[in-house]
Amino acid sequence: MKDRKAVAALVFGILGLLVPILGVVALGFGYTSRKSIKASQGLLVGAGMAKAGMILGAIEIALMILFVSLGGSS
Image 1: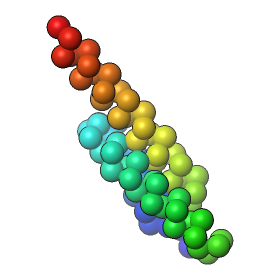
Image 2 (image 1 turned 90 degrees about the horizontal axis):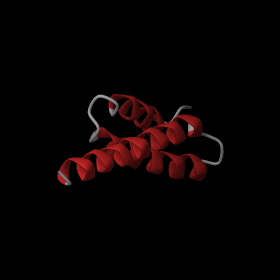
Image 3 (image 1 turned 120 degrees about the vertical axis):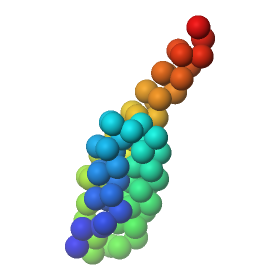
Image 4 (image 1 turned 30 degrees about the vertical axis):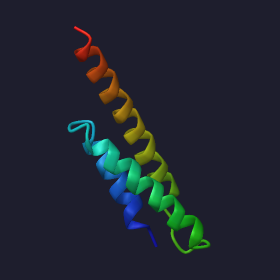
């Protein structure tokens, strides 16, 4: 069975490209999903989706910090 948090992480990671603050949500869902998947001993799948959501979330957070730091320096 797919872990719903993994799906949510991926969806929020993709939506975070439009609304960068959702990257934080994607990172959180991805982290909790990976913990749940590991604890399920093979009953839950979706580690790849969780990881992709975490990666997208981390990229969005980094870009948000970059834009804020560049905008604040002028």
